[in-house]
Structure formats: structure tokens, C-alpha cells
Amino acid sequence: MIQRIHQHRLATASVIVFLLCPMAFFIPRSAIWLLALGGMVGLLTGSITSSDIKSPISLAILGLILWGGISSIWSLGSLESLALSFRLLLIWGFGIGWCSLLKDYSETEHSKILRWLFLGVITSFVFLGIDYILGNPWQNLWQKSSAKAFIPLGLAISLSAWLCILWLRSAASITLFLGAAFLIFSLIDCDSTSVGLVVGLVVFGLCFLMPKVTVRSAQILAIITILVTPFAVHSFLTVDRIHDINQNMRSYSYVHRLYIWQAIGEKIQNNWMLGYGLDSSRHDQLGGAQKKWPMIDHADQEIIINSREIPIHPHNAPLQWWLELGVIGALLGTLLIVRLLQALLPFRGMALAVPMGLLTTSSVIAFVNLGFWQTWWLAVLWILAGLLMPLLRQPPHKIKN
Picture 1 (tube, rainbow, N blue to C red):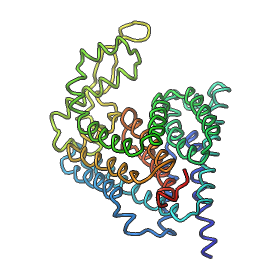
Picture 2 (picture 1 turned 90 degrees about the vertical axis):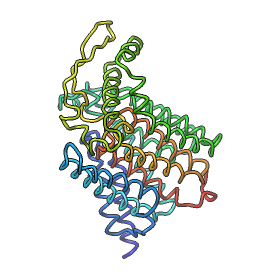
Picture 3 (picture 1 turned 90 degrees about the horizontal axis):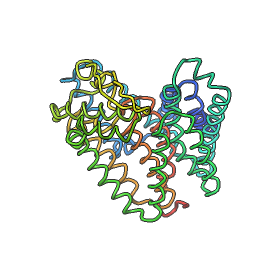
Picture 4 (picture 1 turned 135 degrees about the vertical axis):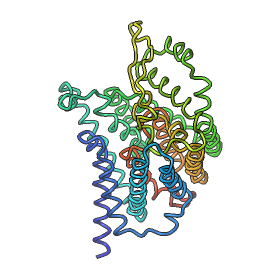
């Protein structure tokens, strides 16, 4: 009976990781349902210990969620803040269950699960390739741009690539896989997929050359970046300076984002202590003003960007933490990343380089692209982080590089 339950758990985990990327092609935000399924199975059949819940990383996540819930007291949208904090708490619970589902597998079983993830990524490559060759029928069916149709899938692929690298291991296989991934990224209108993976690969290589220095440097950089970003943005990103940057950078989305960050930097200065409340970026009272920002496009034509001052979210995790949760939220976000890096310090080889690559790619994406609280995004991070648990639970000296 125990063996049968173990096999069912293994099959469930394999199906979930296989579907992660292919399902995102058809249903972009499907990761949350996959995490919920895996989390429920893990909570019902796994062996969750107090150390799973009370670990420094888990407590840092809980602290960020609970502070978000407390912020509903002064939030511009109290009910919205409470609802989001409840959803984040559910995701945390499902994440704990998912990690519990994965933690007892042997090295061979873990490798089988990673193989299914790899096959799912390759399947998503095929879907994107066929859609492109046929003239994007799936994209056109929903009347969406490439960015709106496939960004969640592109980001899921970019992050899943690190677990595929862990499974492939050989330099030739990894090189071939990465070449295919960057080719597929060229079909998706989302630069952060490629940039995040490239920066992650740089850190991946540094982890083999100087592991301890790389982790310690990442901790220092994270602290400086998160705590200084809003004040640097406020001081540096003036409207005139954005005009100067626009002379060399004609991308609509990039220039638009600079204007958004400039506006958010000003708002943070007005309420940096407590922030405006969890998820208040969406609130009309904070970011609903219609703005007209000047821009020079690729054809050297002067155009006007017509937009909300904050279109749904800041597209920058540190700015979102500061804007919505104030200095305490920023400190809790900093603590979370520092704790994640601290946990990796004892490891070497692939056991260090792969998690560092995943964390780096995730950070690049979170710092320049989407809203940090998007549930599908957090679900992808939990699913992939859970796949690293069997590797990181082994004593560092026993891990094969």
C-alpha cells in the first residue's frame, strides 16, 4: 500500500512538471492550478515537519505575506489587500505541500521527474514552432499580440531551463538545448526571457570559478539594489533624462517603463514608511491618472504615450515592495533573497550553480517585467523551487558535480 501511494505521488509530480510549459501555451496562467493539485496531494500524503514551516526562508515569505495583510488597515483598497494576502497564503501552503511531495524521492526518481519537465519544455518548443510556421493561428484566434499571448510561457521556459540543465548535465546537450531555447525566444516578444537567462548563465559560470565570492557578492548586490532603487530612480530618472535616454533607445515599452518608474519613484517619496497597501498599484486613486508622455519612435517621429500613470503594476519588484508595503516590506523582501542565498553557501558545483542561475533569472524578470504578486508567476517559482529540494537536502559533499 505504501509503495502504491509512493508511485501515485511520483506519477502526479511527473504529470504536473510535464504540463507546466505546454499548458501555458493554451492557458497562460495555468501554473496556479498545477501547484494547487501538487500541493493538495503533498499536504494529504506527505510528511510535513515543523522545520519545513519554520525554516528561515519559509518564515521570510510568511512575514512578507502577513505584513501585506496588515497593510490592509491603511490600504487604498482594504478588501483587495486582504483578498490578495489570503491568496498568497494559499500559494504558500500549496508550495509547502508541493515541496513535501518531492522531498523523499531517490536520485533516480528525481531524475525521472526532471526528464518529464524537459519533455514538457521541448513539447512547448514544438507548439510555438508550429504556431509560427502556420502564421500564428492560435495567437490570432484570441486576437492577442505575441507578448500578451506567450509571455507567461516564455518566462516559464526561461526558468524551467535551469532544471533542464541540471538533468542534461553534458556540455554538448546543454549547448544544443540553450540554442533551441534562444531560437524559440526570438519568436516571443519578451526580451526579459533571453536577458534573464543570459545573466543567469554568467552567474552560473562564476559559481564554478569563485563560488563563495559569487554568493556573497549577490547578497550585497541584492541589499543595495532593493534598498536604494526607489531613491536612485527618483534622483536619476527625471523627465529630461528620460528624453536623453530616448535618443539612444527607441523602444516604446522600454521608454514607457522608465516613465512609469519615474512616477512611482515620486509616489514612494511621499509615503516610504508604510506604503499605500498591498496591491494598491492597481487602485485608481494611486495610479489611475491618465498621462501623456512624449517619445521619439524608431522612425524618428515624435509620438505621445497615452497611459495610466501605473498600468496595473510597477513592473519592478523592489519598487512594488516599497510602493505598497513601505520600508518594512522592502526589508522583508531583502531578507527573503538574502536568506535564499545564505542557504546556498555550503554547496558547490551544479548544486550551487543551477539554483543560483534560477534565482538570478527570476530576479532579472521580477526586477524589469511583471507584477511580483501575480499568482501564476509565484506558482511557477514554487514548482521549480520544489524540484531543487531533493538536490539541496543532500549533504553538499555527497552531491555529484
